[in-house]
Image (cartoon, rainbow, N blue to C red; front, side, top):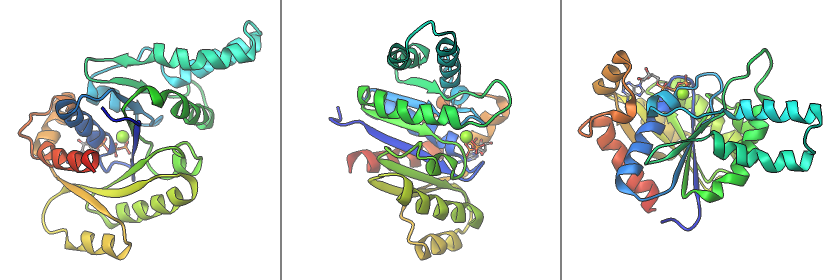
Length: 255
Ligand SMILES: Nc1ncnc2c1ncn2[C@@H]1O[C@H](COP(=O)(O)OP(=O)(O)OP(=O)(O)O)[C@@H](O)[C@H]1O
Ligand SMILES: [Mg+2]
């Protein structure tokens, strides 16, 4: 068991494969290690982690927040008690399988921005993560959660790119923001959906001095699972993407 919790945020441009790779990482960690693992679906716009790992939390962070706001307004509980109850409610709202726990940030019910739930996520990350050995956060696409310091306490930032130069430009912007707004210990890129010759991608990443953690092939099994609506967590062990992810996970966790 790891002595200190390791918090890993999976970030990157929209659609590059953040949620799929978070799921593959969770699957490999489950198979290889005996860690108490928490998965966080931190994407309020495309909350797909729950369906990919086939687990649904009872209550989202947004529902817990709204409930707390209602109680504060009705003055049925004092503020101190409310604050204490939020962590408890988060635990209550989590889904649990034999391999990991999961909670989601959720989507706002009405119009409005995601700032309040992101602020609460930052606080929850600081308080509950000590109860786990490893925390994997599937982030919203782009820079928002880094710039708003939601991820300020994470240890490892994984930036996912695909084989487009635009996704690498986003990766570079994320790294710049992360330097300012987080206290990460490690950062690196996983190139996803790799096929054909990607020399240009390597050259660009080297020019920008972005460290490469590994690469995941474009995997027909993932395409088929998505097409048939099957959960990615059940991907066959011999899938090329899982074989590569195993190397990456060992490298990250044995470092
Ligand atoms: N290695 C891969 N091989 C084949 N298809 C992949 C691979 N990785 C991801 N995909 C496909 O790419 C699409 C986007 O994946 P995913 O939802 O994980 O991206 P995302 O970065 O989380 O997107 P969003 O920004 O919307 O949250 C999905 O259709 C997924 O099946
Ligand atoms: Mg996603």
